[in-house]
Image 1 (cartoon, rainbow, N blue to C red):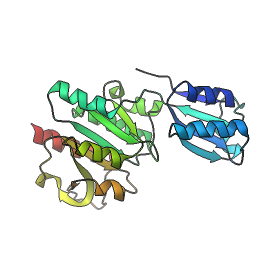
Image 2: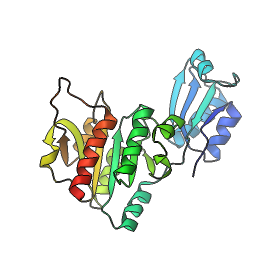
Image 3: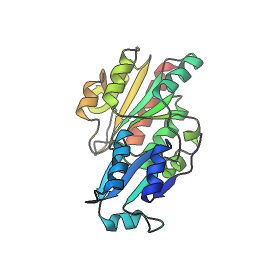
Length: 245
């Protein structure tokens, strides 16, 4: 189900958006503003685990389309998020072991869009992203995915590590991209698998990596030591495809 990407401005409009159940990716609040209505809005945001950013008036004015933001601007998701359980059900219906991509700290919408596109073409059953320190389903992500966002579900979870632990109880195992890991051709990447990709700058965070069963390195022969996150996801995803075939 598709949603139009929305910039929601004004205290009443933002509060009603939260109370109506609309998926809000980010909330921007005027720094230092702590009156009753604003406290109510930030309380609703935290209840829904929405990222709250306290910014200057100049920043709000830059983000505002109406210039009548009243100190609060919210950004709603362009598309509806799925649940991880939905992805497992898709795999079960296809008679396939689950194949999910977990993205840790991917903040570039072009990278996320490209990874969703790759996930679709590689036959992955879904993409999982964290609620914090990550880009959401914006219009740019949708455009970059070249339509794949309409077919490949994306789930947004409060904690990647906890989600991974729960899936391990259901028989999944996890491999993350890491240049210090085992060469990917030497790993058995079949079965119910979660492929974990980190950001270009920081890679996979320590806690998430600790919950992975293996680390996979992509062989490199050039003068630099890292690939773009979406390219790394593509290389590893297709090694999984190759082994599954």
